[in-house]
Image 1 (tube, rainbow, N blue to C red):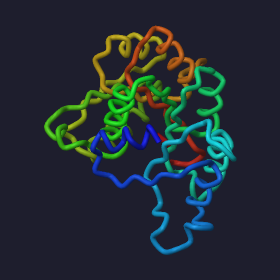
Image 2: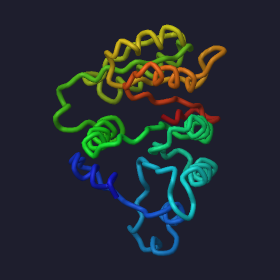
Image 3: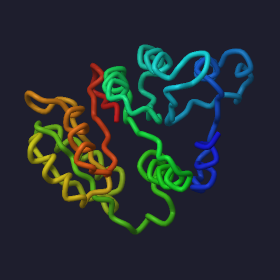
Image 4: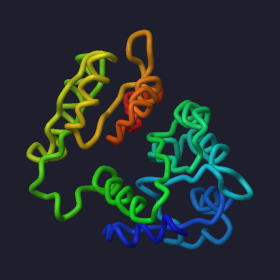
Length: 222
């Protein structure tokens, strides 16, 4: 419930729907049981998923969502108090869009919800005139050009995209702390984006990092 309270406190304008456990989540997504009535379960634009839910935990729910053709394109942000690196790796391997460790304070959680709102739910009112600096860590120039085009279509005046074409350069540029968010490709030569995120966190870099993973088609699950 603390996450729901933090979402309310962050004053996001989006509709928030809350489920109580993993089985309730899957019933909601499949519109079963108490969610069969018309309009009872609108398709979410984003799922904030706790790993340690009762009945069916978030790990199992994530695998089910990403194996279902009707659900797999919904971005899933894993939120957990777990400090186990295996949870991070397995979440990304199962198709999570991002992995976030919950702050220990309510204020920290509210700030996190505001950040999620800005990136995932659309820009908050107070950011309409603010330029968001984005760092793309991607070793394929074609994908950089594609990402630049997509951000330009979204709002050319609100995003400033910088590009780091290698693992080493990406880690160095991200470490300066000049960007609001880093987009990290999963494959970076002989190493992976997961390794880069882990190394960044070990160096106490707090910039939000989102792993970009190809899902077997032309869509990118961000």
